[in-house]
Image (cartoon, rainbow, N blue to C red; front, side, top):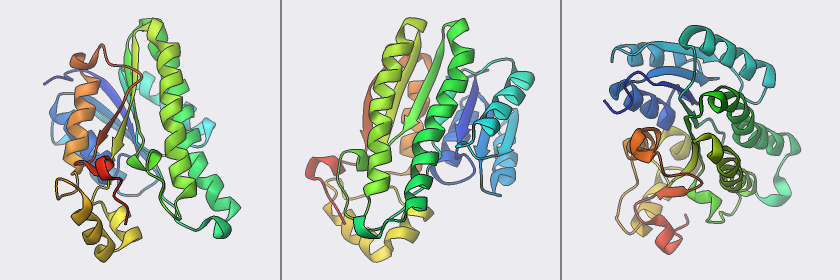
Length: 251
């Protein structure tokens, strides 16, 4: 159990990749704070508890500073400190440039980028005095590969990479590691609903390893970065993509 006794906050933890990350952390001995706007959060919390973890769950919007503040207050009240933050919450929006609605652009930036900033700042306030902590931001290969109709999403994920590097530089003197993971196309419900099964199958054929990464693949890397094995890794981004970036496969 490489995370035994650690306290981890996972945003977007009710389903998809976030749920698998939370489960992996629980299997490794961590206690969890899961945050999501999805009603499935209570079911996920019960699943995590079955691994023996203590769990707090919050149905909250991380793009709102008042709600992030409340999450931190309750977390510190219950656990005393935070060791790990995984900024996983995100929304996906697809539209050609000339059809992007301002409110949809703003929503993507508020959740994907502003939410990452607010949670990072809130957690860093606890981590800096104790001179330890791990922050893992979930970006995407879409931060590197331009996708037609994906201007808002790609921009938000690319911004997360530079945010990660700047924050890593600022927090390194406090022994806090900040890294980003860039998942390749992962067969989650959100992605399949957006792209459709036919596009997904055509895309899979272009990936060098011939398959999509699984949520478990991402969770294993994130658990490694969150553990003591990742103590000297900071300011990096790592793609988990089955070789997708090697040929810039696009649907």
